[in-house]
Length: 517
Image (cartoon, one colour):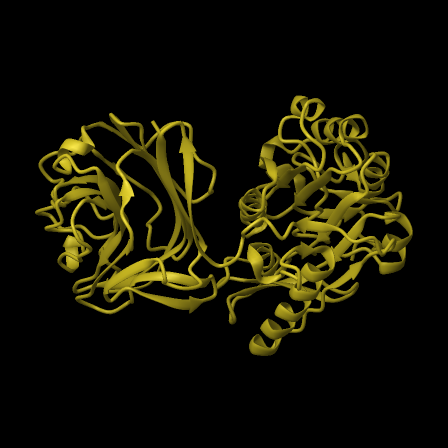
């Protein structure tokens, strides 16, 4: 483990190290921003180059990307750097800037996900992109140097979260055994001097990945805690309440999965650290707010997850269910011949809009079918036909589909996104407004979708990284108000369908914002 000498000079002791403190999204903004700001720099490496001798990490980058999203939802401004962008000069320069930029009331988050090792000099290093056993001292970043740089900042609002590495696959149980690579408690307690630390596992213990969770177990419950599960009695999320929640949750997971993992924390100064204040709403469920812009009101709706269905009208087979992702909106279960829909129960004023959502399509049967559709319409809540109609057909509306089945009368292929008009799912004759996507949406992984409409142009984006692409997959000019019959109010939601093949269609989180104009 890191911090304990091994015979091997270049060790693979971590597959995932996560350090969290507080930093600036754009360093020049720090000079003019108000006090009490929250910033994060999140670094993740899954793909090391071949010369490094380090294997690919399964969920390191995914964990870093998910942490980025969670911190943003909690009010942090976050910069994410991944894979080949993770180099020593950049990280050292950025950390040195903290001393002059951070103020006493600021909170700083630095997150590193990747391999780590112990060098011949006995120092513990972060394995940055491009490092090899011959370039440890020049290309690796010593952890004690990171801590020294952090101690020079003017803020004491510093938090470190450390998840040990993943090394070796347990094929029978489809989980990855994570060999502990944590620092010793004595070493880190002596060197943190006010920096709070939450470790994924005891020194010498084991930290786990779980394919069902699609994350490291520590990161999964860390994310759940930041979403609101770790609130204390005042409604805030503090270091102590987060550490306590993660410890309990991982203990419960271990009991259910017959795997032992014991996190622990270091709080050497015992000074309270508030990560999310009690006036920042991050709990499960939905938030509906009005945003004023002059005389125009634009509605915004956000589901960080689906703790309840109070603000939704569900039809067909749609339901709120508990999964490893938490409370999710399941549009259809993995059964044949099903259709389901979910719409916000109250209409919103017609405007341009931006929406983003996470989804997972799982348990495909007979190769899996048929897909899901984001829908905007002006009529009452309803659900369309099952099968290739994806619960959308017959609804006079705009629909953007994530299609997982090839119906030759409708589709150009078996995995694409497409823009649907007026309840029709037919794209076979006109392929201008579709895009073939790889890999398959039904691969059981988390996918992301973004849809933006500025009043005359519709843009659709999708990927698995969670980082919104600059270029749209599909762009289409349209008059949406005319399409909806001149409606001044609209309903927004999702539909999905299965046929002779089936799959779960789960929406994990969703935000919608009408653009005031």
